[in-house]
Image (cartoon, rainbow, N blue to C red; front, side, top):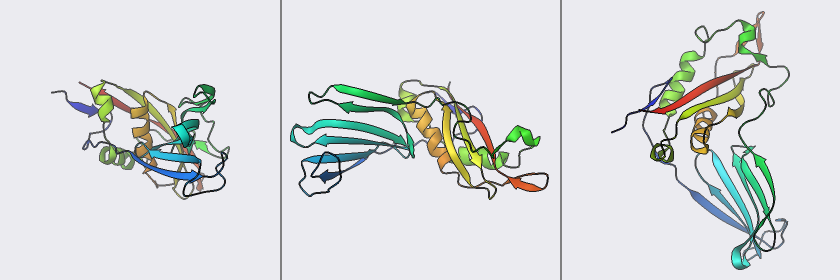
Length: 212
């Protein structure tokens, strides 16, 4: 039997994600007027703790108009618009690989700029423990032997709040969304200081999935 482990952190229990859907009906194709028996519908499906997909369609023959996905509040994957024959008419591609620092406020400092190393970081143990406690190796990744390193970027505000979470280097949706779920549940850390004043900091961490 294969042993699963997280390269940097110890593994906790493995749990499967559950899919939950709900549908809202509308009178018009612009989803402005809700109706109990509208001609149009918006189906929202929660794929897991991180990803939600939306499908807007004409109820008759379930003709798709558009589909979208979100990772948290971040657009994710491919957004498609369909023609009357059900063919993809146009696509917007929101992948995980964004320019480093693109979503970081200008006032934020890089952790290394404060002369803080990984070993001297006051939040090192708290981050490690959080990932160790929350970590799950997605079943689909196990079945397909998917492994790799996901790079997560986020900020710590002057009051210690964790925000601006982004996956800047992904491996596979199952691993990327797992890392997003883990870090999205980390709400607060110790704030950092520079010259005696609290400052916003941004940083990246790698989370590596490996099966042996």
